[in-house]
Amino acid sequence: MSVKGPAPLIDRFGRQVTYLRMSVTDRCDFRCVYCMSEKMEFLPRSEVLSLEELYDIGETFVRLGVNKIRLTGGEPLVRRDILSLIERLGRLPVELVMTTNGSQLPHMAQDLVRAGVQRLNISLDSLNADKFSELTRTGKLDKVLAGIDAARGAGFKRIKLNAVVLKGRNDDEVLDLVEFARRSGLDISFIEEMPLGQISEHGRAEAYCSSDELRELISSRYPLMNSTEDTGGPSRYYRMADSASRIGFISPHSHNFCGDCNRVRLTVEGMLLLCLGNEHSMDLREIVRNHPGDSEALEAALRQAMEIKPEKHEFNLDEEPQILRFMNMTGG
Ligand code: SAM
Ligand code: SF4
Image (cartoon, rainbow, N blue to C red; front, side, top):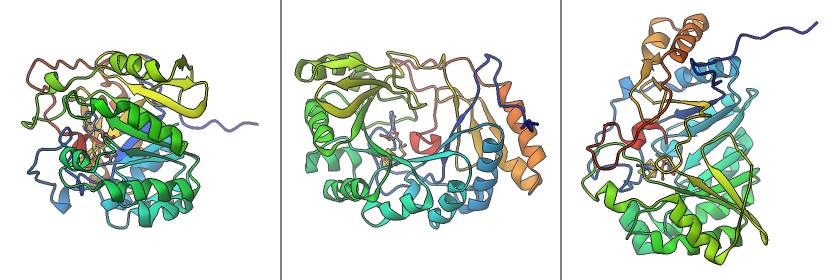
């Protein structure tokens, strides 16, 4: 006799939520120009979910059918004691993955594999040390390259590089980044910048570089073949005949990916964001703090949240950003 589990989380448009992106901190050792303003104020400790609260929310999602959790931030590896949370989540029946800027990987890559992180996304926007410092403001390229090396040797199932491409800043490095990924045996995704938070460093519309433009450029050197591969995220993948590396494109502007959206985001303040490009949200911190240990209250809230997940996002680069939270708050 089969024992039926709880009903899955399904929204009003029939989409099942199977993927949770969990931000474990809003803090970061970098200040990337597209993600943060130069001077950022971070949350006071009392407003941040404890590791225990993060675990309880993750565990409830898994019970309700989530099969993939991505830990992100801010920089997830600067959260104190993050390994203890990862070890606990790693014991759940879920694919545990992480997005990191790579700076802490030289000393943490092996521990992450041991704790159960299966796949890693590492952000890398430039291979030029000066440009890397300009884009990240406080990042050091050599540290991140050492982190990528450490990750390659640590035994992750798969590693993908992520590059946000800005016109006039790093669009001339796209082919070099592809070559680096091929040489290193890694996948790479190129991301269109999203208008999250007010920045003054550059105009988002002027810096916009479409995925189609990049795909054409890459195809001129490495013919790309369509691939139907799906890693459960928003990337569309292409293959090259002479390499195992895959090329992905994340295109919130040019190819809206809302129709098959399977994900929600948890900010480190405990707001469950139901869509990257809309403000629809539910306060889970209030629930875990008012009903500690009560998984039924949490479960009821998650089901209620399914009723307000919007159908799609609308980003418009020519207007003031409609979404005022920065990406480090959103859990990119
Ligand atoms: N600190 C980690 C990192 O940089 O990989 C994880 C968090 S970061 C917010 C996650 C991803 O979001 C990174 O790949 C970053 O490049 C991307 N990102 C940040 N701000 C963005 C924006 N405005 N538009 C598009 N991608 C953005
Ligand atoms: Fe930090 Fe990642 Fe945002 Fe860069 S993109 S500032 S590394 S959180």
